[in-house]
Length: 114
Image 1 (cartoon, rainbow, N blue to C red):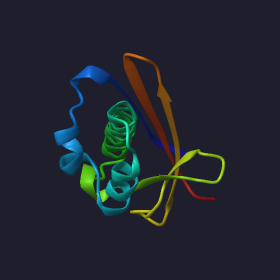
Image 2: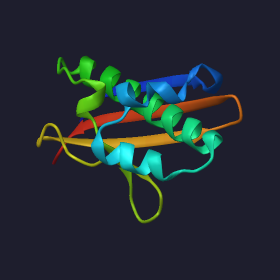
Image 3: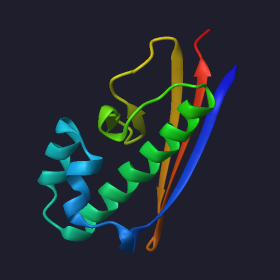
């Protein structure tokens, strides 16, 4: 059963490198720091921002509260984003991030585990 759905769109030129400490946590920050190009850093930050905002919206629909820095989003071997440290054990999360030149979108579906 679906408990919550969240979506967020981010205008990439509004994301600044200095925002990394407010958006990313430890593991994500290591990945971010490994990128040499500023454009790639902005793309990564905007994706993490959008999908974390989408998750926060999905969780709020189920009357659960989470905060951006409590969320760790990594990528699997096929480069798909996933919630690395499940916050609630009884919930399954589906994530998607999509990038374009000017915008990034994050999408989250939260459902009960069966």
